[in-house]
Length: 345
Image 1: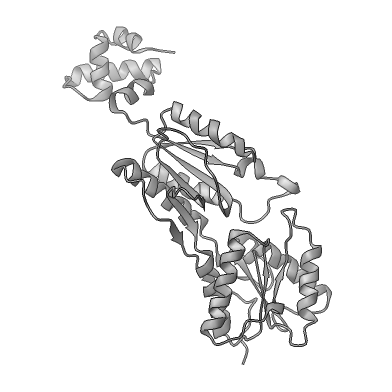
Image 2 (image 1 turned 90 degrees about the horizontal axis):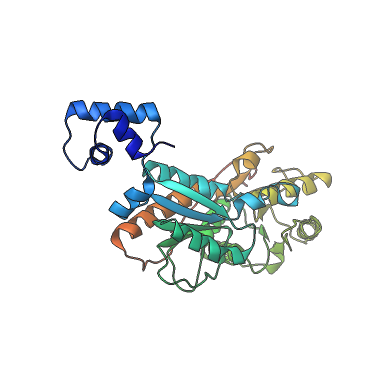
C-alpha cells in the first residue's frame, strides 16, 4: 500500500507538501498540486483517516446496533415489518451528511450491547444509534464517557434520547376513521399481552370509542398472538369467539398486517366475505401485504423510514450542540384507506 512518502518521491516534492495538497490547509501552486494529484492517482494512494481524526477530532463514523440481520429468516421467514426499514431511513440521512455508517448485529443477545458500544467508541464513532425490532423499554449498560446515543423504536428509564412510533395515536386515528364510515361494533385482535404497542394501541382504541360516545365492550377485544412464533391457534380462537357473539362485529382491527392476512383466510374458510359481511383493518401498512391482498387492506402506517431518518438527524444535532437531555419524539403514522373496510349505511 502506497504511503505519503511514496507519493512525495513520485511527485518530487516533500511529504509536507503532499499533506498540504490533501488537507488544503496551506497554499500550494497549481503546478505542484497537479504533480501531487497525478502521483496520488498513479499510486492509488488513500489518505489515512486516523491522521485526519487526530487533527479534527471528527471521524465521520456513526455506529448502529441492531438485531435485524440475525432475525432475518428467523422461524423460517421474515415476520412483521422488519426493522431493516428503520435502518434504511438512518442510512439515507447518514449518506446525505457525508458520514459512514458502521453496523453491528447483536445476534439477539443482550450481553452483546456492551462490547459493541465499546468497540464503536474505540473506533472513535461520533455517535451511536440503537435499534430494536419492537416498541419496548430497554436497559443499557452503564459506560463512563459514552459517546452520544439515540434509541430508535425503544426507550429507557434513564431518559436516553429516543424516537418512537406514536402507537396510541395511530390506533386512535384508524378507529376514528372506521367510526366515520358508520361502524359501531368494532373488534380489536391485539398483539401479545404486555407488549408496549398493545398497551398504547388499546388506549387509542378506547379513546376513539369514548369520544364517539360508544360503550367499550370487552368481548370485542381478543388476543391473537401469545408468543413470537406466531402460532395460529390463538388467532383462530379469537376470530371464532367474535363471530359467535350475539351482536358480532362489523369490522375486525388486527394487531398487524400479517395477522390480517390470516384473518382473511379464517373468515373465508367459514364462508364469511370480506368486506361484504365483515370488514378487516391491519396495522403497519406493510405494502407487500396490504397492497396485494384482495381486497386491498386498510392499514395504519408504522413510520419506520421516517423514524430512522429523524433519529439520525437528532443524533447529528446532539453531536453538534452537546445537548443530551431531550424528551422522547413520537412519530405518527398515516392511516391508508383501502377496500377492506366498507362504509355502512
